[in-house]
Image: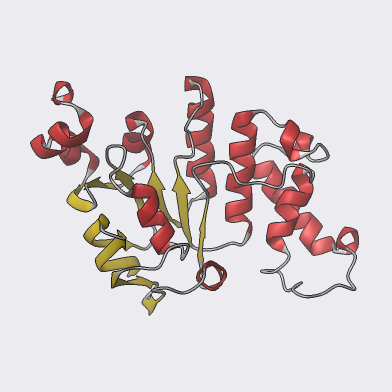
Length: 248
């Protein structure tokens, strides 16, 4: 079954064409990487999928249902969550509170002003489980702003998976990390997305080839190739457009 489907998706900003007829299908449970040079439109594509931008033409389906131009919160409630290229957390809230805030709506506590969060045993227990998964349990009570950069990225992943959605978009999750931090982040992503559909934008090719089942290459707003990692590595058009000919 198809988790995410894009058909002839376009996005223009005035006279500037950023996305030029993208067609893409990602099966359920696949780890799919989207790569391409700077300015190729990768983050714009994520913003179209997650509802932050409206498409100029074309349509998008999530789990067989149209989500074209739905607002982000409705797309999220249909089973898709995402992280951002720039870390997006609540800096003054504790690590625990950041994750817990992402759990309240999916666990049934919506416009419920009479509930005390500290008394929500199931929510707090689930929060602890996620903190263990992202290796931040011992940092639960400190403000998120005081975390190291790699820890903040891990926290954002924790927030992203908190709603238990089945399609997860990660936008450059290892950007700015050292080699050792990247290795830990890759292992974390592999563990927390087990059994889910992962779509990842990433510039680090070691991360891409380590994680992805398939890779799509975006150049000037068009998908020029979608294939298995080994085939993408050998593709002459991809080498010239992005990876560099020396990869061959």
